[in-house]
Image (tube, rainbow, N blue to C red; front, side, top):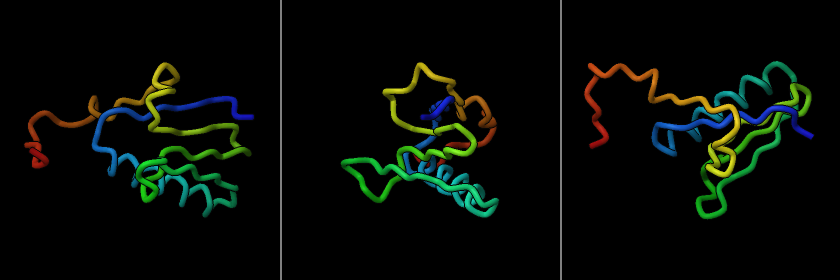
Length: 85
């Protein structure tokens, strides 16, 4: 059972998936077990990771948007042009 669920909002889905992979890689480097859950319609993207020993899950699934949200759009410098458009 996971005690804390952190929801990542903002950014493009692929960027969020890459961020989850980097967090998972670091957790694995420190010897933690990591459970991966992929997006059902886009199996190449990670939707959620769980780290049972830390009692946390980090997700991009909107179903958990009412949980502890981390909005990365708050941290983006408005002076930097958005090249995605």
